[in-house]
Image (cartoon, rainbow, N blue to C red; front, top):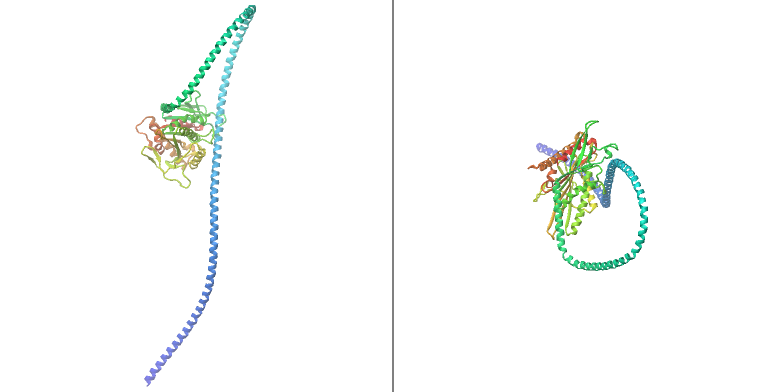
Length: 585
């Protein structure tokens, strides 16, 4: 029983312990239940709040979407307005650029015209002094002649006195002859009437013959129409003969020619108004010029040069173009032609080639296009189809750049290739058709090229060309009825100016440009020397310039070098180098 009691007591204690634990668990469960209910209640409240917030947010989102859509519409309108404004700004920039370009052209034209007028005034003063000296000499000669004539006059007066005495004696004889003459006049009138009648008969006969000749001419007019084809054939033969004779003359004058031009003094030269040019042309022979290089203040050394033609300071753009127009005509008749404008920086190369403005100061390029335009109109009247396309590139440190590229395209790589006919062409180069009679289109091409060309300031020239510019005209003419085709290339090259580094003050990138320019010009000189010496190997491949222009400098191609010379004493050494270079061509 004690064991049972102890066991029951133990179970009772265990049951109490378990009940106590159960009560604690129940209490804990009630607490958790209460917490869960509170949480459920709070979550329900939060849910209701979130539902309200969600509805509010949805309303706000819808309003925001409407606002965003309104903003999008406003942005689109702003973009449209901005695009229109940008286009307007671009147009204004283009107009401003054109206005600035035109103003610069007018300034350059005024500057060139002023320099030309000063040179012409100086030459006129020299001519006037020579004329005054000649007039004084002539006046002295005339005075001597007058004195001799005065002496002769006195002798004649003596002769007149003696003659008067003879006259008085002859008057009596005349009176007696008048009486005899009146008697013979009646007989002479009768003879005159007979002669007039005879002459009237001859006049009537001539009038009849004239009428017969007019009738014969009308009949022969019909025959002339039937002979029109023969006359046209004779005309074509005469034109072919004219072309042949023109080319024969050009070949006799030489396929490679050189002319030299001395520019007038410019305000930037800083010389006195009565300064004498260091380079002068001969007044007796237009193919000779003389350079004077000062050794010291009291002595100078003179150098004489001879070229195909020499132009002095007063020679205008029209006079220079008249000399080169024969080569332009050769290009129009199917020959590859190249014109170089060479000289030290600041010697007037670009002025000779491009010029300034649209008046008397325009250069070889615009004048060549005018000549091509006139020739095109003439050929089209004869049944030809004529087309002209152009390209404009520069060779900058042996890299080719397209001067007619669009603003968006940027720079691309260009290489010189040879087609199946042996002609050179440049890859990825802009070539556009051009009407040589459309002045606005020509100005647009020149303005775009000038915008892209590499120029820089040096101590010798504030706007120094730092590259070789090559303006190429591709001429194509066809006459299907006669089965004739003409194709040629005219290259007009504005070379970069050679310079001495110690005088130009070029440093850094400018010095690298100068070194590349001088090296390229040296390669050009090597080609000309090899051609003049008729060597077996011509080093065309030594530079891209000579390799590109090889068809014009070899075979039947024709080349003209225009050596531009500065008249200042400060540039005498550079002028000497230029003249020596030109004499090697």
